[in-house]
Image (cartoon, rainbow, N blue to C red; front, side, top):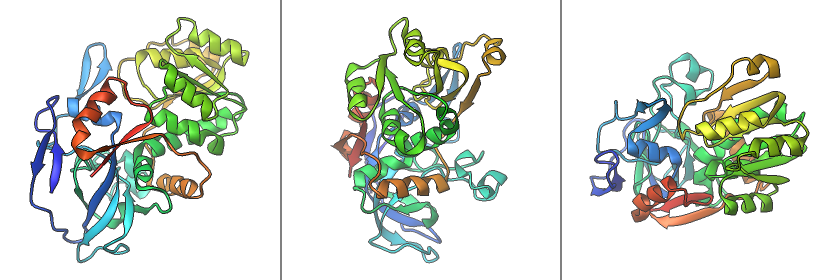
Length: 350
């Protein structure tokens, strides 16, 4: 099995060859056809999240090196364990990577992605920066035809994360405009999904990159804003006559969150999705005085994965722009993503 692995945090990935694993019990061996590259892969490769005020969340604990990143995976089943049910060799599937323990109250409620002891693919267990990946059971596999393999892979994180956040914003956005902050892979996925999931009278987008803003306009944004402008929040409030009903921050930095908060109307909701890092600076009296809501959104449940795939397979949402690259370009993809040089989603092809 060929993999491009983290052997030291922050150092270039190393190409390694190991014996092809043989599935046991319920396990399933998938030949990886496509694996998306996510910004969280960058954080995992670096080994930490920035919590602001000089604090960092250590991501190196509980993970043995070498480790294979990659959680947006689609491919072909090539072997199954003796007790694996509902899947056969030759089946083409996309992986739901946010695996829980299966026994806790969160998992029982169908919220595996919020399991406190979960073992997500590419995060805890080995992922898809490889030509094969071993999965613990077939329940994490979803049919994706007639979607293309590369596009289907992106549904596992960028699509699912956008879907989950938009569902949380839907009730608030029905009463006013919706603002999407950050037009990376997840934010751009949200632009395509928003008309199908919300009744917002207008979709507004903000980013610091002119090319991304132009792409958002071609994908249906009613208006766009340069988030780096000193008066960006004021521009949004002027455009909406008082602010947006809901804002989704797909960056998750101090500046992006402050901008999104400043763009909210009274009674508005801020949903923070991005993991760029930092601390939120907030005048507490504004929360009650403006009746604001702040909440987080983290990927999505298996049920939401099924709903998203059904929506995508129906052909009712536009495709995310995809930059396909060979598996050998995994390190270059991480570098480009960290530097902000990616439009849409990079997908590695094994």
